[in-house]
Length: 93
Image 1 (tube, one colour):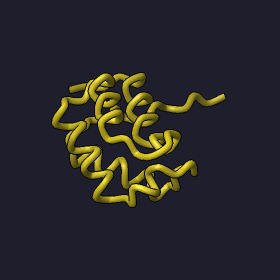
Image 2: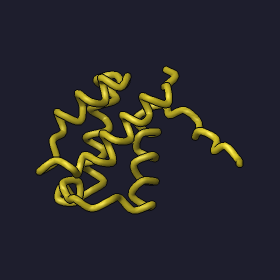
Image 3: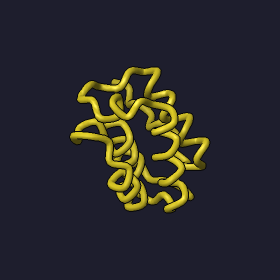
Image 4: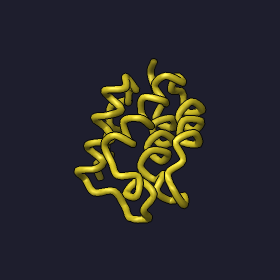
C-alpha cells in the first residue's frame, strides 16, 4: 500500500495527538487509521503496540510527544506494516 502525504498527516495526527482526547480511545484511533488507509489488522496492531509500549496515562496526556516517543511510534508503525511515504523534501530558498 502506498500512502499519500495526506494519509500520513492523518495517521501521524491520529497516533501522535491521540493525547488531545480525554483518555486513550483505541477503537476511535483504529477507526481513524482505517479511514486513513490502514487495514483493520494494521490498526489493531498499532493500538495494541501503543498500549504495550506506553503507559495509557501517557497516551492520554496533553503534552507534546518527545522525539524519542515519535521515533518509537514510527518503529511500531513499521512493525505493524503501516507503510509511510518518504519524508517530504523541504524546499530551499
